[in-house]
Image 1 (cartoon, rainbow, N blue to C red):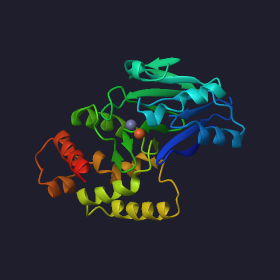
Image 2 (image 1 turned 30 degrees about the horizontal axis):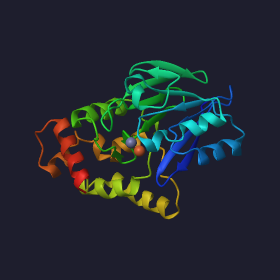
Image 3 (image 1 turned 180 degrees about the horizontal axis):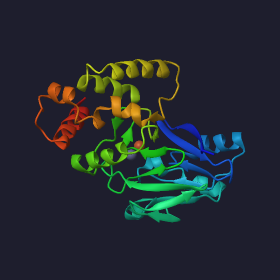
Length: 255
Ligand code: ZN
Ligand code: FE
């Protein structure tokens, strides 16, 4: 049985995700922006929190950990290499490690770029990717610590996962990401259709996450550095994929 997934809006524009295994009762939360909405979502379903999956150390992803731990006995997972900047970890992983949750394999991927030591969790049976602030709906995280080459490698790693994978990312930035994406990939009909869908969802205050990896590959300019129409639009027909990605990221920073 696949995991049940619940999207939990937190703070101004963050998302947490509950992952619940109906067979074992295990319930994890991906990132912990603040305890209130997460505890309320658990209580509504009478689920008991057993795991906290941290993607990276930024305050808007970890500030709720202490309060969640005070209310539950959840074990905290995170990246070993970033342990000194994260809350105390019960399980510290290195990229490439495999874990299990509710009887399914979880792959730990290095997705550094936004920060160094940013990891993603891929639940291989349910096809869920907890991508934090690395791969986002129609976007990717700002490069606070890593290089463009590093983020491009991280995104390429995630793009190799199955198309049906649900990308569970950390923020509701999709509408402004869509406006930017249209400046890079203006003749992409799938992007235009998705941008219209996003506007409609946001007008109804509906989350635009999770998205599928197939949608991201078709419309997210940060996954499309190899696309010939984008390259022609940027005048970068012969540049490397990494250089095209770096240009798109630089333009987003100025957008
Ligand atoms: Zn962040
Ligand atoms: Fe964030």
